[in-house]
Length: 324
Image (cartoon, rainbow, N blue to C red):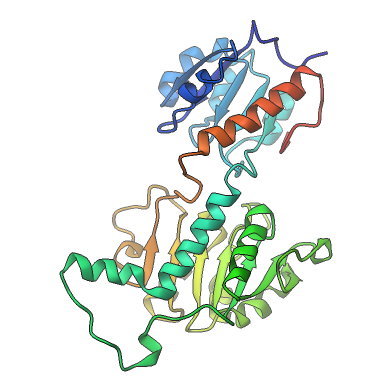
């Protein structure tokens, strides 16, 4: 028995403030009724007609009080920490993530941040804005650097971390992966260690990249002690979730020059508050949680959605990227 109504009776709501899911979905000519809203206030009055909700950061727990027909939530993002999993389960609502939909984009963004920091592109852009031609640098420690032979530690060796490892190997870097179960395979990494050995790995790193999901185990994973374990010449890249890092400890570490810099795509509070010290730090690159945002993103998410709708129509319980 199907877990959702058939095509002729199904209604899908897309909830996002920027991505054009409804337009992209209409181009598929599915015949399925759908609409898009950009705010929670616009969505709530229409929830009684919704069977499937495609949403990420516009999710609010109160939706469940207004959505008696809701049976499936397709997350727009790979992260699902914003969803009340036990509550969804108690209401008989399935949940799936968009894991894999942005693995290329996020891995490429992490590599871009790594390259930008080591080649000092952020400083070059600052100089360009001031029409300043930087002279050659006598102090070798202040020059741009090369990646060959450098060690990249990747915390979280899922799809994004594994792809980042392959990109790094193309630059002849040494890659150490950190994951809960190191016996499940190294992939492109030269070595994989358990999370318990995180600080040992950090001490070897020239660059640390965070690509892990936010879970109770990873929240605050990178704190003052972990940052202290890093080399003063090392960079931190975060394309995971802001709360994986103790942000106050990171700001203190950066302000005191205890690490060389950071490329940050996610933060404790988003948008990043205007008074955050991170904005003004010359050795920090801030991007607005845009690592997964590409021209192909709607298409990538809709492919996962259509796959899951097919599985639900067939009465299957094996959703792609199932969470609940």
